[in-house]
Image (tube, rainbow, N blue to C red):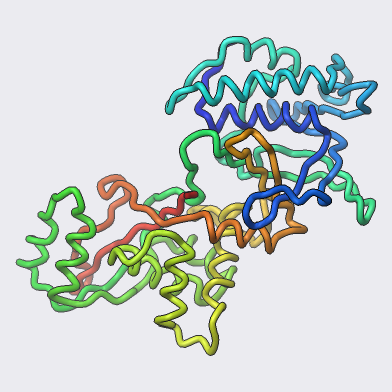
Length: 357
């Protein structure tokens, strides 16, 4: 069976092989560097191939290898050395791969050894890999779900643009005739040009979110989270900055919400980024719990696999703020950057998308 996938999808299979070969999950600091003394021994990795059918890779020992179990029944044993060789082979092929989906000759044999049929988890789920780890400090052995992001391909998105991520701004001082002219702007930088023309002739004031589910999700994080993002988004569309940490610095200087001291905008926005990374989706009602309850696993461009465990949440939040940016999606697809009237008022939607740098 020949399967194809993009670099991000192939990276999920690579993580499985790499972690089985080492049997250890090392923690990362804010700069995505390994913390030498902080790691979690892996007891087993669990994959759900089909509903109700579980694959388990139990790391017995370096001498006795890894037991591959299908619904708790052992089907074969593989060695950590074999997994290390397969991981190195897959890493090289991923690096050689193109930007779009591609096949890797020989991957079918690797997957046959592992008794698996899928290279990656369903896109509807934030959990890409589930494992049981041993906490050296407490002796606790939880089963944790981790989300996987890879640096081997193009920078992945943290939050995908959609109709649900539109923020609505009320526009004043613009006539219907001028609005028509603004909507007709079709330059390469049409979004920025439209915003500039609106602000040169009128004003924009945040009104509400297009999607009430996303609004409610943001309220769970912080009562003013919606307003913080709305102010950041307008700064971004005014072309003042792109990187999240730079936008936050501008927010701290301007202080639109009148907070009594510095650091509050950064603190709150990091909570938002972390919530998105670990479970919250814009159009799905969220209960505040992490879907990826273990944390984040990152494949570095040199093939090293590191993790931000929820125990090390502060470092993860710092990493997210330093390594993300806002960007613009498709105006036609997501319905934004066009002036429109509703209940005798004029509005424009601005869309939110967050990508890793």
